[in-house]
Length: 122
Image 1 (cartoon, rainbow, N blue to C red):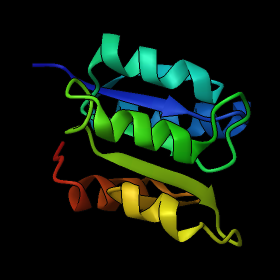
Image 2: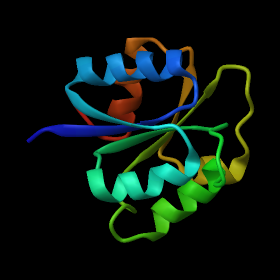
Image 3: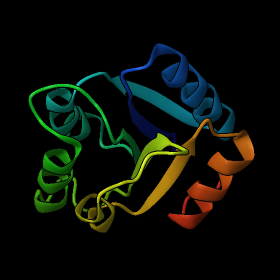
Image 4: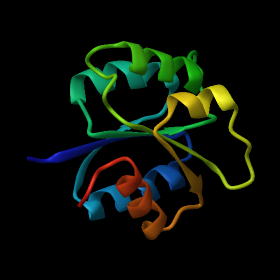
């Protein structure tokens, strides 16, 4: 079975880097660029994990997206990993809804560790 990863990030460089990591790990990758796109994409793709940027632009904040994902029966079991810059403080409510956090810039080893933390092996 093919593993799938939904990556939501506004920075093209970070999106590409995380996509390379995910593909190397064995994921098929779907991408989103704004908060309002993630929920519908997650429902249609049914990814094994979602990487969600803490500062994603759009009509929905990452906290709103997490609430939608965590309350919908189709998406509530998908682990959400929040991605953020190393010096950014992530608000507690966001962290409570997330399975883990990945600080950027990340290395492939960081990515692999976070996948292990949320129970996904290559």
